[in-house]
Amino acid sequence: MVQRTDYLEHLKAWKDEKVIKVITGIRRCGKSTLLRQYMDYLIETGVKEKQIIFLNFEELEYEDLLDYKALYQYLVSNLSPEGTTYIFLDEIQKVPEFERAVDSLYIKDNVDIYITGSNSFLLSGELATLLSGRYVKLSVLPFSFKEYYELNGDKSPDDAFMDYMSNGAFPYVALMDKTKEKIDAYLEGIYNTIIVKDIEERQSRRENNNSEKRKINDIALLKNIARFLAGSIGSLISVKSITDYIISSGRKISPNTVEGYLDVLEEAFVFYPVDRYDVLGKQLLKTNRKIYIVDLGLRRFMLSRRNYDLGFSLENVVYFELLRRGYTVNIGKAAASEVDFVARKNDRLKYYQVTASLMDENTFQREIAPLKSLNDNYPKAILTLDRFTAGDYDGIEVINIIDWLLNKTGADI
Image 1 (cartoon, rainbow, N blue to C red):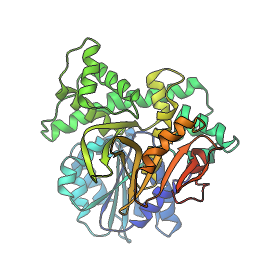
Image 2: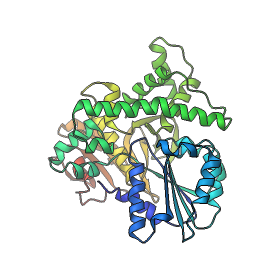
Image 3: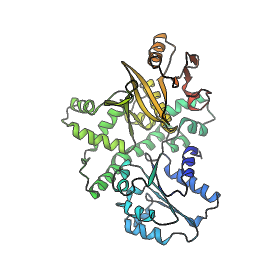
């Protein structure tokens, strides 16, 4: 089992702090395993098992606790009289009005609460209102390439990366005896659960909260929009461009409807929108944005084709790696040119271009030109599959992307 070290360190840093720890991420990305690894850590550091309550609401034995009042009474009656009780509520969004129970527990002494959910909507309702300023969020993603390689170290890094790009990074996929049929069957299960089951739960929560948000009742349309987005990663899109695509296929639809369906796919952590940032004007741009998919294996399953846009797929990998490393990420606009990623942390910037190859001179000049146009002293790099072109070009690092993902480079980038 791979230890999710960075995520574990985050939880350890917030242990016993009077805030609710909210752990979010797409289904099957490893949230439950992370909780169990953290509980093992608690026991190793002296916490007694009777001080830990773990409830996974996807398990049938907890069906009686899907009522928030019953859940609250169960938890209160099982609080430990010896020190802090650590409460872990996995997939809490299955409990209607769970926030009432969580809020009442929060105000009690000697209680440390951890909740997980597979839909960001759980933070946009009453929980966010009731607990404003009283929770911290940890966003969990499928395996990084470094984590994936730890489980597949019998292969060369290059071969393992090819598998990673094709099969994706869901933890179970990394562990399984891989055949295309098994992987596709597993990904199909995740996809259908997200598209059907999670959407139903989302609708139920909206109804319970008397939300005026648009209802999602056309699964075929939702899947059509999802396929369009999967085929458009790395390209500038807008609600209008998605609407035009749907209309071109012979269906009448309004931008307002498209926006509602897009919200659903983003809330389920399938797609991540990335806004553009004017590097020279130092402001976010409101028009157009790019979108990336949380897992390339899921993308391959959705598009049902073998070979596609290697450069955009590499961009996708880099975007999520930057998120894992704690950066806020935007697409950069520098005058008439574009920088693939502007990464920000602690008010410091890093600039990245991503390309499959720099062997062609025209490609090299095209990729390096936007970085040369930036006159600040922040680090700049081009990430590529090439190894022959690696080096320093007037302060711009050219780095093999696999080495970068495995943290094998000495550069501060």
